[in-house]
Length: 214
Image (cartoon, rainbow, N blue to C red; front, top):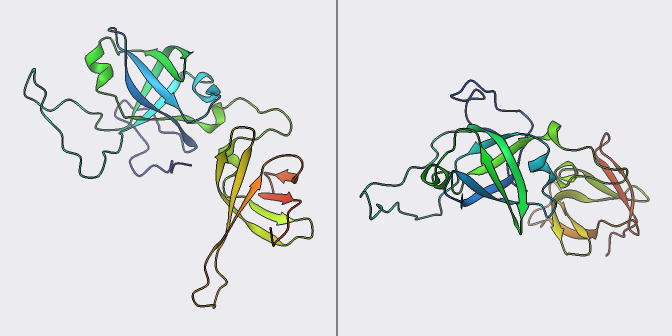
């Protein structure tokens, strides 16, 4: 998952406070239409996080290594880029194929929308819909410690992999302290009821029916 820790002032230029629990959920990939609409690519196949709030917080996109800004043929100037975090007030948003298309307050033409291309979209974690019983958001599973039924550590969840039919926990056990050249051990554990015994977000603990030698 992406790092969402802010490294800038929590108060934006418009006086809005950046939420401490901001989670990156999507990126703006293009303009949509000619009246300032934007196309947003969600990181989840179920983009409910984008629909659960009208407040989308933006951070500038990170340019590719070695990327060079090129002047436009029309004006000879470098295209405008989002220079600082900001808040978008969403007017409308809906799914359209693999993307979400949206209109936002104050964005009225295609050039302004294109200037946001590449921007990272964050929403407050508190705005997420409450999941059903035995459902969890990926972001809440990252960092949890995984143990066998017998209490032996299987590792800490550092990522989740979407294989289609189900998700897989990617767990890593760091090398043993004091042992030189000890490499970290990685385990992939399917996040399905056949192998997951319990999940406690409060205790930051997952118990799995899994062996140390798997």
